[in-house]
Image (cartoon, rainbow, N blue to C red; front, side, top):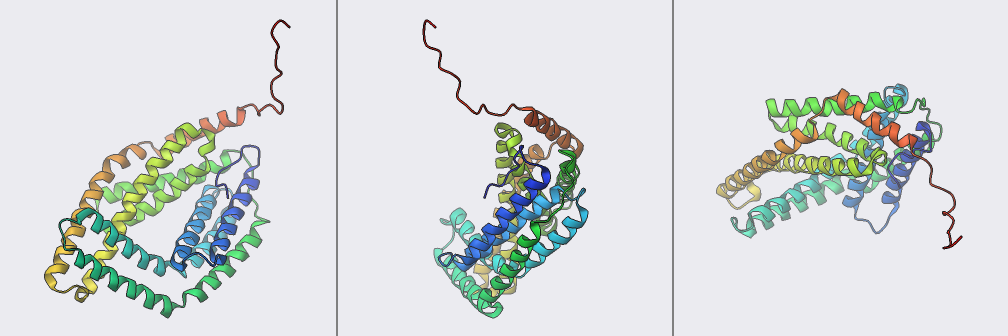
Length: 314
């Protein structure tokens, strides 16, 4: 489903239609028998985050709606969040192997991957993944039903400005905290806030696609770097708790050292990109987006019919 505002629709129409499209997508992922269960978890959680970013965009003019539905989608996603984390651990092993494949015996990565896959399978069974997805489906279907009557006051860009300012402002503050007091927690919190701003930029990309599509790509690159850093941090914690997964302590210590090295590289790449993407103040960004919105709204509609053909000599 298209995840962007249509200038010919009201704010309320846009919010309802976009949310309903994402919720229907989430339900279709759960219902798809050909989709791997862990891929389903990933896609369902992503769709939920996109709806939550949309709700954050109108949160200051529809506070009750935001509080109720954001909490409902968040709580539903928590039913399956642990399973996504277990998959992220495996993805981090791939990341490490791709970066250090010539520096480490490949058997170490194989041992770790086998242990992580076994743990994921066991936890999926313990948590009864299918039952949890059924509960999530019920939650999202209820949200979809309620979305038909969502009320969002329609004041044009003013309906969006407050939520845009709040979301971007939080991403900006979290970046400063992450740089001033770097830790796994501060960097993870920064990524969460930045991801909401990224989705809001996608929602508004049609205001000026040539500019905002490129900005979204840069934010996406940044959130990917932060995501890889966070996943590596989680894998490091797993190795600390389960050192016996590898043949000997030296292997574990060596792998932890490589995790720290790769995280340092990722964070070094993050800083210059972040300072460009988050260079503006919150007020400055909102003012710029308002200018784009006004120009977008003033664009003439496409002509319904093609221009007449003028024949030579007539």
